[in-house]
Image (tube, rainbow, N blue to C red; front, side, top):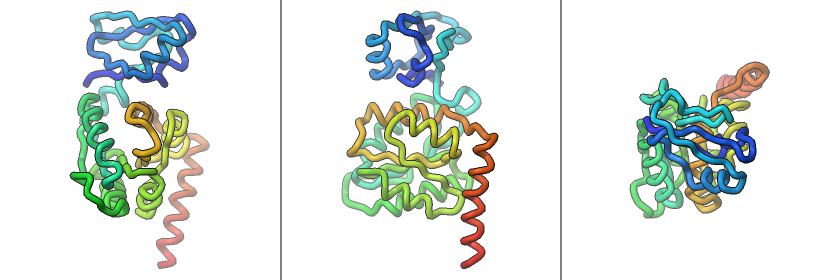
Length: 219
């Protein structure tokens, strides 16, 4: 699995600092821009064990134990092109993906694909899911109607990290017409690499599950 270095990984690196990378490391354009702006340099080494620098930058999203994890991904016509781009990144990062459509830019209805992705995650067919439409709002609403799905609409690295760390989000929703493809890549990389913090957040996520259970009993 090729490691990827994003702008988010440089947040803890001081100005003028150094990040150790290998020849396999994929450095995103935003990371290169951030490094240039803050005078951060990249030092190439040949040993994978030196992949993480003392400045705190990390390698590939998720780590080696997640190489076999499956990410379900689906989009309507507004998100089709971004879906295809993100599939390529997932492949580069060593993830398997489950493409649940659509397969063209012909007009379709976003709830169908959001439901399919959320179902795949809730059933355990996929580890995490990604849904994409033009704004990301409708798909997140639709995905959250599936019991067990916790979909989060993210538009930057901070919301991506927060949704995983605090809310244990298992479905990422993206608005293809509101963010750039490079921003979407950064968001996805951060989202995949951020673990759930547990602790006090676990109690709150359990309360979300309790809401689902109470409504299920009323039906």
